Image (tube, rainbow, N blue to C red):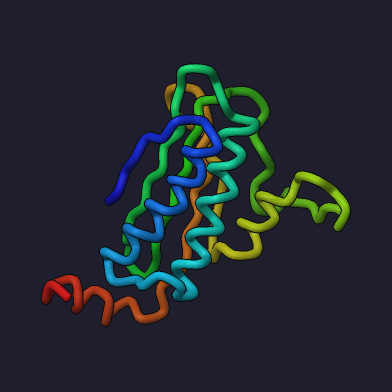
Length: 146
């Protein structure tokens, strides 16, 4: 598992994406691969939302990545309580001219599975999974040490 707390700033959101694809590369999922690109998009959207909508002064947001059987699990948590964003069934298409509102639509389009869950202490977590097509060869490389 990889866990990192990041400042609720645009710089923190950019760093979350860079850290995520870097960690995937360490795990044997190379930069630029379909899985790496999907995870980068999934991290970028809730991280940007955590900075823009979920920011509470003095509180960070958190990025977690895990390799679970057959997939990469991405978790982005913020500390803002209040109305939760819609889950997979509640995402609506936005106008092509809209300046915002596409974040969860991107997650919905790219993730194989995702949901929004409450977090303790107050806040919420966007959980998303991206399937790893060559799971067994990835695990074999990890055991051998690449």
